[in-house]
Length: 164
Image (cartoon, rainbow, N blue to C red; front, side, top):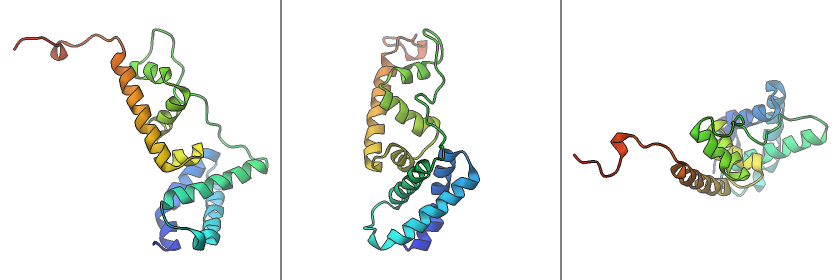
């Protein structure tokens, strides 16, 4: 089991980065990260091991909730992180992404557009890292099916039945 100092050194950038993205304020994020590690220090003896990242981000999420209760506003997570597209136009990937159910759409955007890690996405969504990994796998499969079902012209090099 890692010591608290090792956890701090290894995970400070992740916790601080998560908080900076949610608050939009680097100074506030650093204060909240300090509060997160203070709370982690108090709870360290009760920690049963497992994913340190998920544990620390869960604490950070609770620190954020406390900030909201004090009246501070966080950077909102919009319904869609990818710009709206016009019907019949725009990028194939964006159109297919927009066709997915809202939860899958938002999860894929958090991971692939905004670059959140599975642990950060879990903290944002209030679920476990394992649940996010499973949901991402399912969302990618749904995206793949929808993308392949799109009616797009096939290039000559990929056409079936061409003779050599």
